[in-house]
Image 1 (tube, helix red, strand yellow):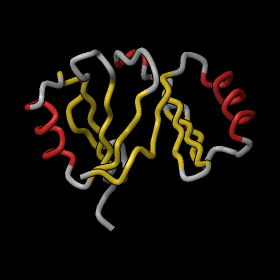
Image 2 (cartoon, one colour):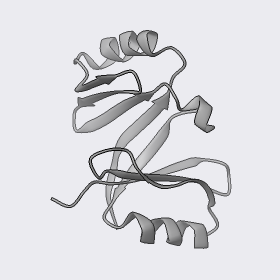
Image 3 (tube, helix red, strand yellow):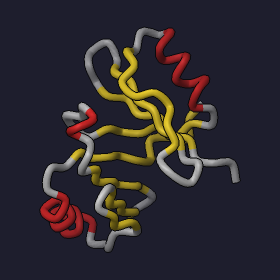
Length: 116
């Protein structure tokens, strides 16, 4: 059902400071560097910085599980007791994301890449 946990998005308040910190940590330049999102790829991991995350109610990093059918996975999680946080939305190029909170309040993100 999943291809694993490959993406984590950090909500940040100061994008420039966060870029300096994650650049030092990862030792790579961002592959995406926009005012609304900065993304790094390192060791098979996608690390994103979202300056709008706090405004969307994110209080900490969101791990994203890569799935093949985001709507079916989201429905299964909701049926299993998760609370909806963000419905399925396209974040560009056909990439879909959604998120829920588990019964303990932990954030669980879902990500579906466009079909190749």
